[in-house]
Image: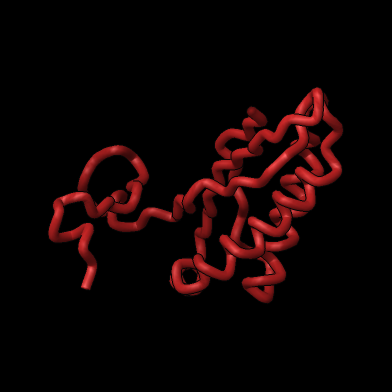
Length: 126
């Protein structure tokens, strides 16, 4: 049973076009929960790297597979983000291009083929 539905907090999927109708029912975007990893900040303090991700999948069959594989994708993304955070020097900005390449490779590995395009929202190191 989904307790969030009882509390009225259940979220609805994002819809393309912002409106209703046929365009809204064929949304190709799936937002995933935020991925976080520990980093070492200047002075040896601990910090956090936060990455917002989503997947754009135009193919309907692959889109259904992406939705079913969301937990595996989140696990693969957590590993990739933590690996990127481990090599991050204190006070240095993250290498977003390398991170995107690693996350796209993880997406292709989990899905078994290309076709699901990774989208990055923000990358924050605090």
